[in-house]
Amino acid sequence: MQSFGRWKLLAAAACLVSPPAYTEDMMRHVDLSSPMFSSAEMTRAEVEGSLQASPTGAVLSGKSLNGLDLSGLDFSNVNFRAARMNKTNFSGAKLDGAVLDQVWAMAADFSGASLRKANLFASQMQEAKCDGADFSGARVAADLSRASLRNAKFTGADLAADMRNQSMGLMRAVLKSADLAGADFEGANLALTDLQFAKFPGANLKGASLAEAEAGGADFRGAILGHTNFNGTDLTSARIDAAQEKAFSGAKNLDRAFRE
Image 1 (spheres, rainbow, N blue to C red):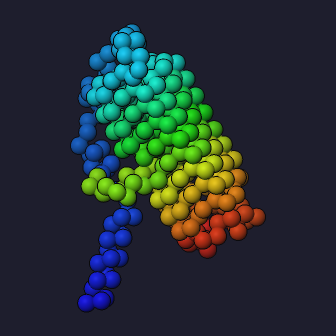
Image 2: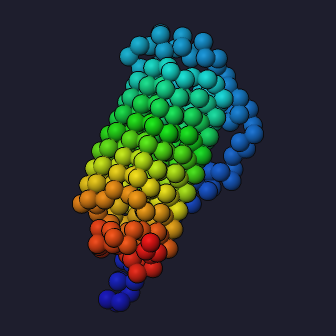
Image 3: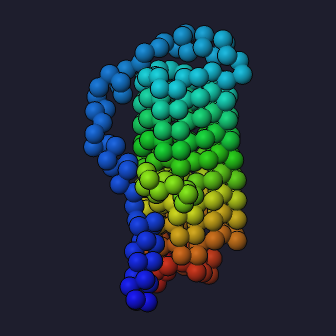
Protein backbone atom coordinates (compact mmCIF):
# COMPACT_ATOMS: atom_id res chain seq x y z
CA MET A 1 0.00 0.00 0.00
CA GLN A 2 2.80 2.39 0.84
CA SER A 3 4.52 1.83 -2.51
CA PHE A 4 1.23 2.25 -4.34
CA GLY A 5 0.53 5.53 -2.52
CA ARG A 6 4.00 6.77 -3.37
CA TRP A 7 3.45 5.84 -7.02
CA LYS A 8 0.23 7.86 -7.10
CA LEU A 9 2.02 10.90 -5.70
CA LEU A 10 4.77 10.61 -8.29
CA ALA A 11 2.22 10.23 -11.09
CA ALA A 12 0.37 13.33 -9.89
CA ALA A 13 3.61 15.30 -9.77
CA ALA A 14 4.49 14.19 -13.28
CA CYS A 15 1.15 15.47 -14.54
CA LEU A 16 1.85 18.87 -13.01
CA VAL A 17 5.16 19.33 -14.78
CA SER A 18 4.34 17.70 -18.09
CA PRO A 19 3.95 20.01 -21.11
CA PRO A 20 0.34 21.18 -21.55
CA ALA A 21 -1.71 19.83 -24.41
CA TYR A 22 -4.13 22.77 -24.18
CA THR A 23 -2.33 25.02 -26.67
CA GLU A 24 -1.77 22.17 -29.11
CA ASP A 25 -5.44 21.21 -28.94
CA MET A 26 -6.51 24.82 -29.56
CA MET A 27 -4.26 25.15 -32.59
CA ARG A 28 -5.50 21.88 -34.04
CA HIS A 29 -9.11 23.10 -34.11
CA VAL A 30 -8.50 26.70 -35.26
CA ASP A 31 -8.48 27.85 -38.87
CA LEU A 32 -6.09 30.80 -38.78
CA SER A 33 -6.99 31.66 -42.38
CA SER A 34 -10.64 32.27 -41.48
CA PRO A 35 -11.87 35.90 -41.38
CA MET A 36 -12.15 35.75 -37.58
CA PHE A 37 -8.38 35.26 -37.30
CA SER A 38 -7.16 37.09 -40.38
CA SER A 39 -9.32 40.20 -40.90
CA ALA A 40 -10.59 43.13 -38.82
CA GLU A 41 -14.12 44.12 -37.90
CA MET A 42 -13.06 47.65 -36.95
CA THR A 43 -10.89 50.33 -38.50
CA ARG A 44 -8.17 52.25 -36.68
CA ALA A 45 -10.49 55.27 -36.59
CA GLU A 46 -13.22 53.19 -34.95
CA VAL A 47 -10.77 51.85 -32.39
CA GLU A 48 -9.66 55.41 -31.60
CA GLY A 49 -13.31 56.40 -31.22
CA SER A 50 -13.84 53.57 -28.73
CA LEU A 51 -10.84 54.77 -26.72
CA GLN A 52 -12.11 58.35 -26.67
CA ALA A 53 -15.58 57.22 -25.57
CA SER A 54 -14.16 55.28 -22.61
CA PRO A 55 -11.11 57.18 -21.36
CA THR A 56 -10.95 55.08 -18.16
CA GLY A 57 -10.59 51.81 -20.07
CA ALA A 58 -12.33 50.74 -23.26
CA VAL A 59 -13.60 47.20 -23.79
CA LEU A 60 -12.39 45.52 -26.97
CA SER A 61 -12.81 41.97 -25.74
CA GLY A 62 -13.69 39.40 -28.38
CA LYS A 63 -13.04 41.79 -31.26
CA SER A 64 -11.24 40.87 -34.46
CA LEU A 65 -8.47 43.43 -34.90
CA ASN A 66 -6.20 41.37 -37.11
CA GLY A 67 -3.68 43.24 -39.24
CA LEU A 68 -4.64 46.74 -38.09
CA ASP A 69 -2.07 49.49 -37.60
CA LEU A 70 -2.70 50.51 -33.99
CA SER A 71 0.79 51.80 -33.39
CA GLY A 72 1.31 54.58 -30.88
CA LEU A 73 -2.20 54.46 -29.37
CA ASP A 74 -2.89 54.56 -25.64
CA PHE A 75 -4.62 51.32 -24.57
CA SER A 76 -3.96 51.69 -20.83
CA ASN A 77 -6.33 49.45 -18.80
CA VAL A 78 -8.20 48.35 -21.96
CA ASN A 79 -9.88 44.93 -21.83
CA PHE A 80 -8.81 42.85 -24.88
CA ARG A 81 -9.82 39.49 -23.44
CA ALA A 82 -10.14 36.84 -26.19
CA ALA A 83 -9.61 39.42 -28.96
CA ARG A 84 -7.98 38.37 -32.23
CA MET A 85 -5.05 40.59 -33.19
CA ASN A 86 -2.85 38.41 -35.35
CA LYS A 87 -0.24 40.46 -37.26
CA THR A 88 -1.58 43.66 -35.67
CA ASN A 89 0.87 46.54 -35.27
CA PHE A 90 1.04 47.78 -31.65
CA SER A 91 4.54 49.20 -31.96
CA GLY A 92 5.09 52.10 -29.57
CA ALA A 93 1.59 51.66 -28.10
CA LYS A 94 0.82 52.00 -24.41
CA LEU A 95 -0.90 48.95 -22.92
CA ASP A 96 -0.12 49.47 -19.24
CA GLY A 97 -2.56 47.52 -17.07
CA ALA A 98 -4.32 46.13 -20.14
CA VAL A 99 -6.06 42.75 -20.00
CA LEU A 100 -4.72 40.55 -22.80
CA ASP A 101 -5.91 37.21 -21.47
CA GLN A 102 -6.61 34.54 -24.11
CA VAL A 103 -5.86 36.89 -26.99
CA TRP A 104 -4.60 35.68 -30.35
CA ALA A 105 -1.65 37.90 -31.22
CA MET A 106 0.44 35.65 -33.41
CA ALA A 107 3.13 37.53 -35.34
CA ALA A 108 1.83 40.79 -33.85
CA ASP A 109 4.27 43.70 -33.49
CA PHE A 110 4.71 45.07 -29.95
CA SER A 111 8.11 46.64 -30.60
CA GLY A 112 8.79 49.42 -28.11
CA ALA A 113 5.31 49.03 -26.59
CA SER A 114 4.69 49.50 -22.87
CA LEU A 115 2.83 46.63 -21.19
CA ARG A 116 3.71 47.44 -17.60
CA LYS A 117 1.51 45.49 -15.16
CA ALA A 118 -0.51 44.10 -18.07
CA ASN A 119 -2.13 40.68 -17.76
CA LEU A 120 -1.37 38.08 -20.44
CA PHE A 121 -2.83 34.72 -19.44
CA ALA A 122 -3.22 31.86 -21.93
CA SER A 123 -2.35 34.30 -24.73
CA GLN A 124 -1.21 33.00 -28.12
CA MET A 125 1.73 35.19 -29.17
CA GLN A 126 3.92 32.85 -31.19
CA GLU A 127 6.40 34.67 -33.44
CA ALA A 128 5.40 38.05 -32.03
CA LYS A 129 7.89 40.89 -32.35
CA CYS A 130 8.42 42.48 -28.94
CA ASP A 131 11.86 44.03 -29.25
CA GLY A 132 12.30 46.73 -26.61
CA ALA A 133 8.83 46.15 -25.14
CA ASP A 134 8.36 46.81 -21.42
CA PHE A 135 6.62 43.99 -19.49
CA SER A 136 7.75 45.22 -16.06
CA GLY A 137 5.50 43.88 -13.30
CA ALA A 138 3.28 42.11 -15.84
CA ARG A 139 1.71 38.67 -15.47
CA VAL A 140 2.90 36.81 -18.54
CA ALA A 141 1.58 33.25 -18.91
CA ALA A 142 1.62 33.47 -22.70
CA ASP A 143 2.98 31.32 -25.51
CA LEU A 144 5.82 33.40 -26.97
CA SER A 145 7.47 30.58 -28.87
CA ARG A 146 9.88 31.86 -31.54
CA ALA A 147 9.14 35.45 -30.51
CA SER A 148 11.72 38.20 -30.82
CA LEU A 149 12.16 39.83 -27.41
CA ARG A 150 15.50 41.51 -27.89
CA ASN A 151 16.14 44.12 -25.17
CA ALA A 152 12.63 43.60 -23.77
CA LYS A 153 12.14 44.45 -20.11
CA PHE A 154 10.64 41.93 -17.68
CA THR A 155 11.86 43.35 -14.36
CA GLY A 156 9.69 42.05 -11.54
CA ALA A 157 7.39 40.26 -14.02
CA ASP A 158 5.67 36.96 -13.19
CA LEU A 159 6.07 34.37 -15.95
CA ALA A 160 5.80 31.36 -13.66
CA ALA A 161 3.38 28.46 -13.92
CA ASP A 162 -0.05 28.86 -12.35
CA MET A 163 -0.35 25.81 -10.10
CA ARG A 164 -3.86 26.62 -8.84
CA ASN A 165 -5.93 25.69 -11.88
CA GLN A 166 -4.87 22.73 -14.01
CA SER A 167 -8.12 22.25 -15.95
CA MET A 168 -6.53 23.98 -18.98
CA GLY A 169 -3.15 22.32 -18.54
CA LEU A 170 -0.05 23.90 -17.04
CA MET A 171 -0.43 27.59 -17.82
CA ARG A 172 2.93 29.35 -17.89
CA ALA A 173 5.17 31.41 -20.11
CA VAL A 174 6.43 29.44 -23.08
CA LEU A 175 9.57 30.94 -24.63
CA LYS A 176 10.63 28.08 -26.86
CA SER A 177 13.30 29.21 -29.33
CA ALA A 178 12.66 32.85 -28.39
CA ASP A 179 15.35 35.47 -29.01
CA LEU A 180 15.97 37.07 -25.59
CA ALA A 181 19.22 38.84 -26.38
CA GLY A 182 19.75 41.75 -24.00
CA ALA A 183 16.38 41.22 -22.27
CA ASP A 184 16.13 42.35 -18.65
CA PHE A 185 14.68 39.70 -16.31
CA GLU A 186 16.05 41.14 -13.06
CA GLY A 187 13.90 39.93 -10.17
CA ALA A 188 11.49 38.14 -12.52
CA ASN A 189 9.81 34.82 -11.71
CA LEU A 190 10.31 32.22 -14.45
CA ALA A 191 9.75 29.14 -12.31
CA LEU A 192 8.50 26.12 -14.28
CA THR A 193 8.53 28.06 -17.56
CA ASP A 194 9.40 26.49 -20.91
CA LEU A 195 12.71 27.97 -22.07
CA GLN A 196 13.80 25.22 -24.41
CA PHE A 197 16.25 26.48 -27.06
CA ALA A 198 15.75 30.10 -25.96
CA LYS A 199 18.72 32.41 -26.48
CA PHE A 200 19.91 34.63 -23.60
CA PRO A 201 23.07 36.43 -24.83
CA GLY A 202 23.53 39.60 -22.77
CA ALA A 203 20.25 39.00 -20.91
CA ASN A 204 20.11 40.19 -17.29
CA LEU A 205 19.02 37.32 -15.02
CA LYS A 206 20.14 38.84 -11.73
CA GLY A 207 17.85 37.83 -8.89
CA ALA A 208 15.56 35.94 -11.27
CA SER A 209 14.10 32.53 -10.46
CA LEU A 210 14.30 29.85 -13.14
CA ALA A 211 13.56 27.08 -10.65
CA GLU A 212 12.27 23.86 -12.25
CA ALA A 213 12.23 25.54 -15.68
CA GLU A 214 12.67 23.44 -18.82
CA ALA A 215 15.78 24.91 -20.40
CA GLY A 216 17.01 22.06 -22.55
CA GLY A 217 19.06 23.37 -25.45
CA ALA A 218 18.85 26.97 -24.18
CA ASP A 219 21.85 29.24 -24.74
CA PHE A 220 22.94 31.09 -21.59
CA ARG A 221 26.33 32.16 -22.94
CA GLY A 222 26.92 35.81 -22.16
CA ALA A 223 23.95 36.06 -19.79
CA ILE A 224 24.39 38.26 -16.72
CA LEU A 225 23.94 36.09 -13.63
CA GLY A 226 23.89 36.88 -9.93
CA HIS A 227 21.78 35.27 -7.21
CA THR A 228 19.89 33.55 -10.02
CA ASN A 229 17.84 30.57 -8.87
CA PHE A 230 18.50 27.52 -11.07
CA ASN A 231 17.30 24.93 -8.56
CA GLY A 232 15.88 22.02 -10.53
CA THR A 233 16.28 23.79 -13.88
CA ASP A 234 16.77 21.18 -16.61
CA LEU A 235 19.93 22.15 -18.51
CA THR A 236 20.14 19.12 -20.80
CA SER A 237 22.16 20.18 -23.86
CA ALA A 238 22.07 23.83 -22.75
CA ARG A 239 25.06 26.03 -23.53
CA ILE A 240 26.74 27.85 -20.64
CA ASP A 241 29.94 29.77 -20.05
CA ALA A 242 32.44 27.49 -18.31
CA ALA A 243 33.53 30.40 -16.11
CA GLN A 244 29.97 30.74 -14.76
CA GLU A 245 29.33 27.08 -14.00
CA LYS A 246 29.04 27.72 -10.25
CA ALA A 247 26.14 30.11 -10.88
CA PHE A 248 24.11 27.12 -12.13
CA SER A 249 24.46 25.23 -8.86
CA GLY A 250 21.38 23.17 -8.10
CA ALA A 251 20.38 22.78 -11.75
CA LYS A 252 19.27 19.41 -13.07
CA ASN A 253 21.42 17.63 -15.65
CA LEU A 254 24.15 20.26 -15.35
CA ASP A 255 26.59 17.53 -16.34
CA ARG A 256 24.81 17.30 -19.70
CA ALA A 257 25.24 21.00 -20.49
CA PHE A 258 27.84 22.20 -23.00
CA ARG A 259 30.53 24.42 -21.48
CA GLU A 260 32.23 26.91 -23.73
